[in-house]
Length: 144
Image 1 (cartoon, rainbow, N blue to C red):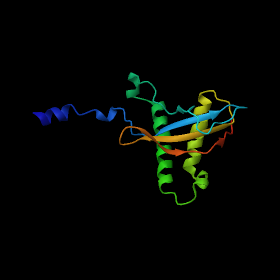
Image 2 (tube, rainbow, N blue to C red; image 1 turned 135 degrees about the horizontal axis):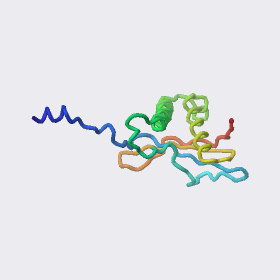
Image 3 (cartoon, helix red, strand yellow; image 1 turned 60 degrees about the vertical axis):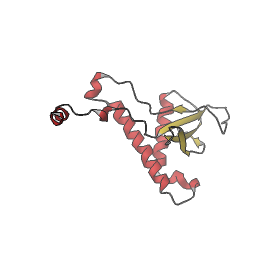
Image 4 (cartoon, rainbow, N blue to C red; image 1 turned 30 degrees about the vertical axis):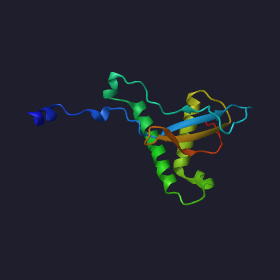
């Protein structure tokens, strides 16, 4: 009877919210301001949108968010296998992809500054967020 119940009513755990994804944090500097090296002015990008009933059928924003998270995961994998000097990390396509994501997120928040910094954090075994990568200050290039 238990097997029949499991067959007819499967576990829908794959709809659960997962926290093990890397988190992208961005810090931008407005024109004319100085960037503080250890600034706490980070905001979390790529947050999930509120769930609606029609997301059972179509969820383009969530699909886009997951695709961007996949770029973060690809960058982390590239970073883990990187053999060169970390100052040359900008040459990676995945790094350029993360920069594009950061620019789009800042544009979405109506930011009009000149520079940004990003960091990628991930939950550790203890549940605390650990820095996986902190970028150098990058100049923003606005494309319209």
